[in-house]
Length: 374
Image (cartoon, rainbow, N blue to C red; front, side, top):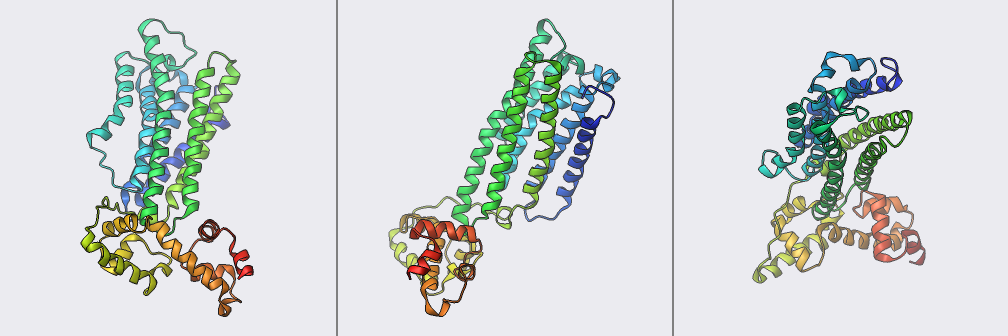
């Protein structure tokens, strides 16, 4: 990145920054039932676009002599955006399952590292040249730059942990709300989180090796870091666009309260009727809210009953009956010519992978083996 103006690496940064800008606009224009996740994700793309643009200005050999690089403006924007990426990604994952009040004081505390960086850079007049590790500084300015580099490289690791926790809570909430989870979507979320973890760790490695390796090796580490950003930008955009309807329409269910014993038996009977007579578990897209609406009970009461009476959550409860229905169909003479896939859908499942996973866990053998024994 320290060669001729707009070499191939610089061109990749420019094109990716433009892509981020376009994606941010599209995310705000595309229709969605819940707009907050889209807007937060759009903000994340804007941050990445600013990081790539300021990185190009700071490190490009020809742009170093530009007047703007002799002011704190560029490095202030760069440091602030780097420190805001972690919080914004964290809020995005949280917003998939609940509305996040961004102006609440606890959430505003996440802005503190970026605010500290801006104040220090402006107060000490650190410009783009002084920001580069190769520049030798003395006194307080040297300490300030060293502190800010450490803050930029180390703080994202805390948000990796926070993002993993947020994604885990999303999984748990979906188990209580939905009878079938799009496993591929959650796996993609895992991949994206793992990718950003790799990206931040690589960036940290490049920072730690600065001064210990040659300039060419250091430049190569930085270039690879930028290409990781390019790859992960596209991965995160795919995740944001193809979130399942379930993830985009989650409504938080109030914490389940104990059901009074006098009312428990009656409500259990209603649930039993819905399962054994009405067979609501055969509806492939049934969820807790829809189930509650059809039987006339409150979602939180159903959650409480499932937990206390059935020792289960909605996800496990519904799929348990679906597996029993599949077992019946697999050995029924009138369905002997039906394929396994056809029986999967007749049982209420809309995901073959979820069906095979549940069947093997509950029955101990595969559906094919069960049919052969039957």
